[in-house]
Amino acid sequence: MDTMRWTDDGVLELLDQTRLPSEVVYIKCATHGEVAAAIKRLAVRGAPAIGAAAAFGLVLAGRRLKCLPEEEFIAGLRAAAAELAATRPTAVNLRWALERMTRRLETSGSRDPDALCAVLLAEARSLYGEDVAGNRKMGVYGQELIPAAARILTHCNAGALATAGYGTALGVIRAAREAGKGISVYAGETRPLLQGARLTAWEMLQENIPVTLITDNMAGYLMARGGVDLVLVGADRIAANGDVANKIGTYVLAVLAREHNLPFYVAAPVSTIDLSLASGQEIPIEEREPEEVTHLAGLPLAPGGVSVWNPAFDITPHRLVTAIITDWGIVRPPYVETLQELFETKKT
Ligand code: MRU
Image (cartoon, rainbow, N blue to C red; front, side, top):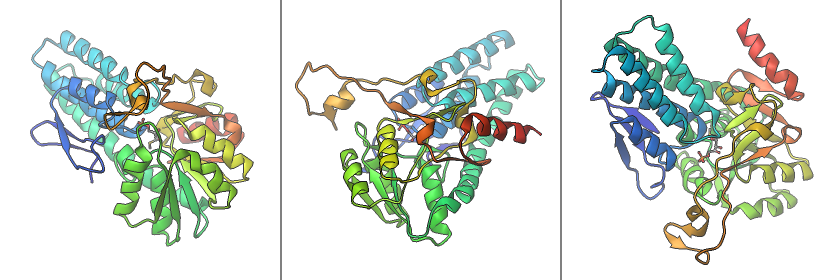
């Protein structure tokens, strides 16, 4: 199932993930504002997927602006990129994708709006295609870390739905399965928005990968009973020292994994690594509406007027991360050195 598709008549269709697993519905976005709204309300979500959606959003902006004089066209595109980038602050892939798109505008050598729209579309398409290819590479590298018959605990959804396809953490799980390993998955439900229950469980069932759903507060007891062999999650941003921002609740799992001597792996494309930030303390953490905590599927769970704190992500300190699986290879501590080396080796 495609997370998103670009149609011949120039519309971006997004699989509305807020309706899964009950309904499979695609929403049509004809403007960058509609894409921004879809990202904000998590109709499309997951770090690489919002980057790709924003890239196509910029194409939509270009198509609307192309009747304007060149200067205004470029200024309008920059404003649209800023609007898309402001939708969600934590996942760096969003900013990375938009910066890549605007850089491509500058290097194209053309000032003609029609030509630039074609350049933008080609760039969004390659960004999308590269994401799937990168996830497959991550799968090849990462599955080497997965023992046969491993019982893997994952959190949130770092699957095909969170990317252009195949997934990061779930991509590694898929690759282990394709390599013939009889693995099984525990999916933490991931309050408040239940990406684990609604999306990861759904993806795994679709492919007949054995999956057991638990609520988030069951993970400790499950580990204490010896029910988990490793934890494997995705990431929204990784700082230069290896600190990892991922869905709220990830940090708890990393602490629990350390207590129970279990490996804690993070799978993420290099576009999630932000070497400009020295540590996770500098990563902006999105805080969302209280209703996501006080309500479930529109029904109130808490007394009206209660005060609520709803951070969407947390930071797992690098010392709790056993290894980071990227599309360029596996990185191990000391991350402050090995992450730098990863980029330097690629440059040469
Ligand atoms: O709020 P969400 O659903 O966008 O959060 C998603 C996550 O935290 C994922 O684990 C992360 O983006 C990695 S997706 C490959």
